[in-house]
Image (cartoon, rainbow, N blue to C red; front, side):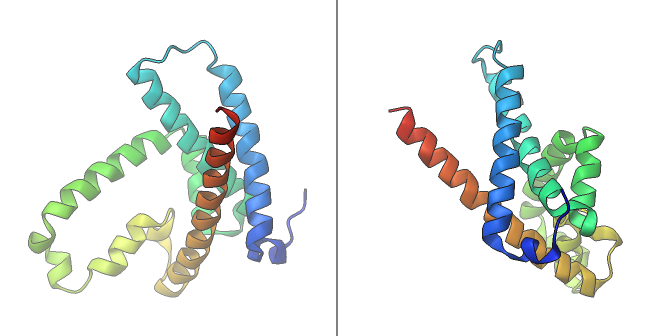
Length: 160
């Protein structure tokens, strides 16, 4: 399937392609995990699998044209997304408590470097490209959230 650059600028096109790929990934997860019990560790594993499926779907819609999508696909391929997500969550939690002690912030280096940490593949980009990638990443995250809200809303209505 050849992707047109203009179709990726169209939010409804991104949403449609993401929804299709994400639902296929969820169906595959459901079939693979049908035998799992409902214990807490299994719920956590399922949560991580859903997150990975969501990011993989989003990155595959964009394709290798963006540094953040290449970085996400590379992480998923290497099965490091779960560990990276947990690591980032711990880092953010710790950084939240130590903002005043962070020398980067006192030197005015914080926001740019923080942005590089938040955007997959952002560490290797110059500032102009980092801003461009950030804009694209935010657009795709918004589409991802909207689609997932609709899926949850539909699922909630059908399960009643």
